[in-house]
Image (cartoon, helix red, strand yellow):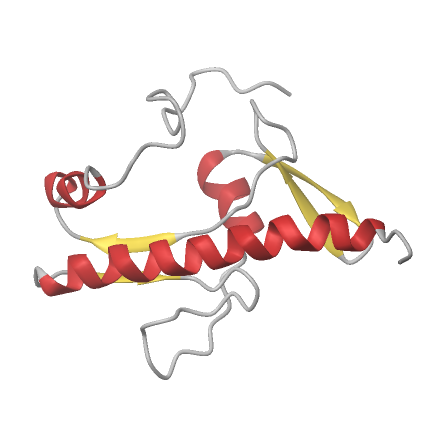
Length: 128
């Protein structure tokens, strides 16, 4: 069998994609069952998964650049997101919700934390 660097990259990203699709669907359904609007974006297509008849594409990288002030760079036809702490070792994915913060926190506390408590807390000073 021949070694393929692309296989080394694709396998972990497919695993992360599958995990997010399950997580995003579960979170969104839990919020919807409480009477709130929620949807998650397919990171591959940029399309919402639950909102029907929508053909507007959401760019995960552009969203993270604009909303979180993360940096990105071009690599051929791809944009690579760089997290201020973890560099390019990230998998950008988005869940949108319209609900009170306490409701979202209650739903999220049912999941194990894979990252420290300070993740997501926007620092006052972003590194250039």
